[in-house]
Image 1: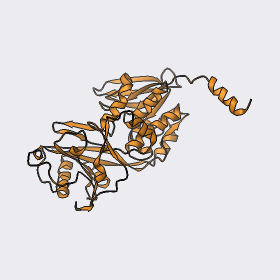
Image 2 (image 1 turned 45 degrees about the vertical axis):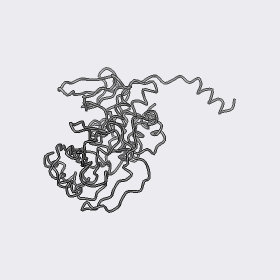
Image 3 (image 1 turned 90 degrees about the vertical axis):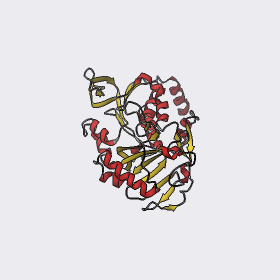
Image 4 (image 1 turned 180 degrees about the horizontal axis):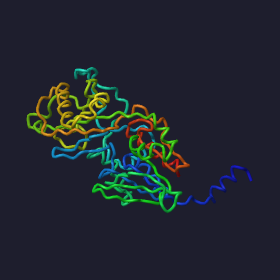
Length: 360
C-alpha cells in the first residue's frame, strides 16, 4: 500500500483523543477565544475571571451620561480567521470613522489633517465589551466570574493534574480540581505570580521575563451641556486624534462612535511615559492633570458633568514575547495574550486561538 494511502487509512480509523478538562484563567479576548475553540473540539473548559463580567481591556463603563470605552477604543481586522469569526455577528460591530484621526503636535495644534486611510476601524455596540460578552455566552456556567485564582498547585488527589485555589469577592475561598492543563490568559504580572516565579514552569517564566508593558491612565469626561438645539458639540471639529502632548497620546469623542448615546463624551489616554511617571498618583490628581491637558489641546474649558480616571497597569506592549503563544507540554501550562505578539485586540484573538490549537 502506498505510504500516502496508508496514512489516510490510519487517519480515518484513528481513535479520537479523550476529552480533557482545561482551566482557562482570564476572560478577555484571548481567554474566551481559547476556551471557545477547546469547547468546540469537545473538551471540558472552566474559565475563571476576576471581574464581574468578561472583556478584559475591551471594557466599557456605563454612566448616567452614556457608555465609555475605558480600554481598547477600536479594533482592526487583518487575520482572515478573525474576519471569519466577526462575520458570524455582522450586526454587532460597525466601522467607525477613526480613519480621520488627526495628528496633533505637542501644543495640541493639528500637525496633519488625518492619518492615511489604510484599513477600517471597528467598534462593537453598544460598547467594546459587547463583542467579548457575546463570544463568552456559550460558556454558560463554565464561566466563573468574580473569582480570582490565587494559586496553581498539583491536584491533592491526582498529582498528574492541577487544582486551583481561588478567592471570591466576599473573601470566600474555594478549590477547583481535576484539570489536565492550565492556560493563562492574563497580563504578564499576574502570569508571573501564578507561575510562582518559575516554580510551576521555569521554561515559561524564562520566556516571559523580557516582556515589558507600559501602563496607561485613561480619563472619561461628559459634557451634556453641549447637547442643545443651537450646539451640536463643543471644541474642535475633529472626533479622534493622536497627540504628542507630553501628557496625552489619544483623544476620542465617544459620542461619534456608531451605536452610542448622543451626549458629548470624551476619552483621553495618557502617554506611556507620563502614565509610568504618575502611576501612583490618586485618581483625583490624575483627573485634574488630564483635564488641564484636555483644555489645552481642545480649547474646551467648560467643567464636565462627569469625570472618571482609570488606570491600566499593563496596557501597551513595549517588548512582546515574540511568539503567538507559549505551551509547556511537560508542565501542562500554556500562556496566551495580546502581549505575546503585540497589543491589538486581534493579537489577543490570534494568541488565544493559537494556544488552543497547540494543545488539542
